[in-house]
Image (spheres, rainbow, N blue to C red):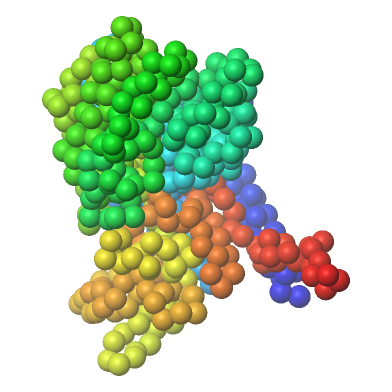
Length: 502
């Protein structure tokens, strides 16, 4: 049966990987760089067995060169091939570099000893191995659902390094967070009333705050603009009597010590983001002034640093944003306030690549079409909103080498059964042939981990990679979904006859 064959292929592939990895480990364990040694891992984290693939080259290469080598190695090793035509690749060195850049940027503009928590927005890349990687790099977790909280806990993120934000928290979620000591930002007056009752009934070590909407306006992508006059998040500060209500809410609750705002994601310029932070800081100063003490001790400025999807440049940078904040809101960064950030896309997007096999090529109406295995299931935003979310695509041949030749306009089509499943229309690329590969760049956040189950297409495997001298090393962060798993999720187990007897 198809399910049995699928399981057999997966098992054979896993056995082959393990045996090759064991042989490689025996030969090259002593060659691992210092930052990969077990002594550098968290105490409860075991080193991952990985596969070494010799692709040639030198150490210390840049992100684009690392990506080129990873694509080649993924094809050579069969990470992507006829039996596994789609995978997500994640550049581990790039992720570590982004985490270090974030921490350094804010350390440079705050006095030593200032409490700063950088909490990764888990929704951007909800994978336990990724959260553990970030945790080892000094990054916590911002969660917005019970599932995301479960992932953060499974990754070993400490409650003190976790922040719960969501516009629809249930009483059970709030109770759990308060019992664990996780920071909670209430979204609205009704949720704050729930916290009133919970705090009265049981003491908690959780830092508690209130989310506000500075209503500074939106960016070019309306769906991601969280500080418009009618945005659904937080208490709208410019609505009639709202600001005074917020001030009184704090004055009546000595245990309310944090203020939170997130002005928008991806489509906002830095100056607009800084205005939102400034409005939040000004409110904190007003509350503390009227309270006659430092009641608000921490300001959560959210995330939302835009990503350049048009090139390999990481622009704007965390350092640029931190300096902009220092110039516009110096009091925020003078050491009087603790700081929380919630960046997501900017930490992971540039370090992810979707690699897909070209199954067929064809012509229609004079247009060339490359039919690939990457479409709406892994790039949902781009397929449904291509103008807002264009992605770069690179062409590779059947051996994983960059394809050369004159650029020819081609549609890059996905496997889903609707006409709009296109990653790009009439995109100039070297002419693709069946058996070639396309790499969809900058997809490390909100793409291959945000699976859309159209046509019951399987979730792809996701593999971290690192380049060490002449080797590319892979480790699976998530194995490909099997057909049996698809059937089970669709009620094919104990529930299969549940509807027949109603």
